[in-house]
Image 1 (cartoon, helix red, strand yellow):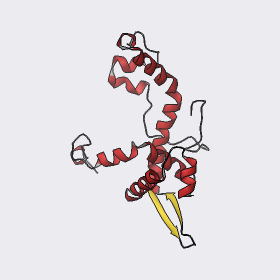
Image 2 (spheres, one colour):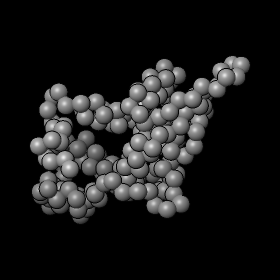
Image 3 (tube, helix red, strand yellow):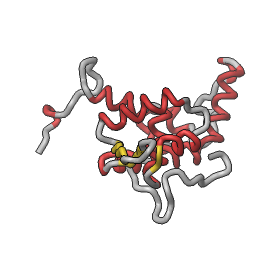
Image 4 (cartoon, helix red, strand yellow):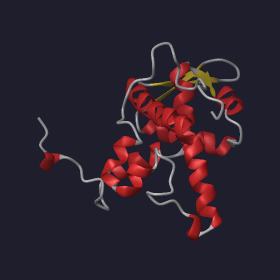
Length: 171
């Protein structure tokens, strides 16, 4: 059993987990994992599904995800060669966690946009515990109360619901 002393210190500059966090914080990696959690796809299919993703960035991101063990690349001997990408079991565990973040974003996009408008209006209009929407107030009063507005992760996607399926009007 791992003790806390044996756990990586993500806050240390030389911790290798920072590289993993960098990968999963990348919007393209998150979107690719979401698609591949649904089904195996070819390179151009992936590119068509994600607007704004260049061929170069798609190639680089897929190579990084493959190197990290999150995506499997399979070349099929056809003319021309066909390459398919699928999610690995390790990648699937990450996709489930990221889906919880997506669900949170969809549920709270209105509050985030309201906070952004207040911030952009200037410091005098920034929310305080007294002026913030009710769901934001606990986090403004005490950082440790963030659980009140951000459910604990990871949690699996609801049964019968896919990672990439949109649930709200904002998704």
